Structure formats: C-alpha cells, structure tokens
Length: 118
Image (cartoon, rainbow, N blue to C red; front, side, top):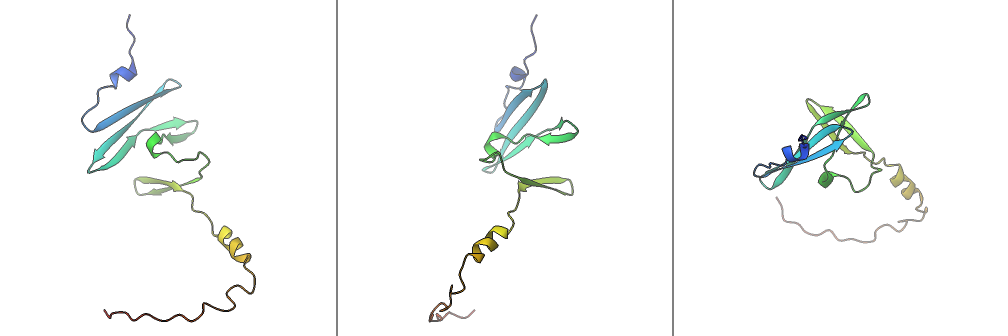
C-alpha cells in the first residue's frame, strides 16, 4: 500500500515559481515566490489558529527578531502588516538630558552661501 506524500505532490516547480510546503498538526500550508521584473512577490494562505486567522511569513521575509510588535491595518481588500511605529517619548527623554546651557552660544556665525536662482 502506498501512502500519499504531499511533499512529493508539490515538488513540481514551474519556471520562476518556487513552492514550499509546511506540514504542522495535520494541516498543509503552502507559500509561493513569484519573480516579476527582478522583485519577488510572495503568496501564502490564511489558516485558522484558534478563533483567529493567521498568515505564515516566509523565512526570507521574516524579521530578524521575534519580539517585533506589528501593526495590522485593513485598507479595502488589503491587509497591511508593518512594524509598530516607535513613539516619540524616547526622543523627548533624550532632549530632556540636555542642560540649559546647551547651544547657549548659538551656532556661531554662518555665512549664507550664494545660490543660483530658479
């Protein structure tokens, strides 16, 4: 009796399309890389994770760290995922470290360079 091997079934690769199969907990996930004009566009499938939907990010697109907080935004039929923007509180704390005499003398004399008109 032969058993069906999903990895062998998906091993046929079309020109310029690379397919990877992930098997976890009896669920098969696939991701594809399609090369168009020098750039790579990845496709993957949404899968169920508890009561939520999840998306597997291919390894070559993964963030360097695993503790990255992300923002998720829906724009029309797109779902955009990006690293969370850092708040400016850190910058304000750095500015607070400057003493009252910082730049007290100003920048000094700076000549205005002559520029060609528009």
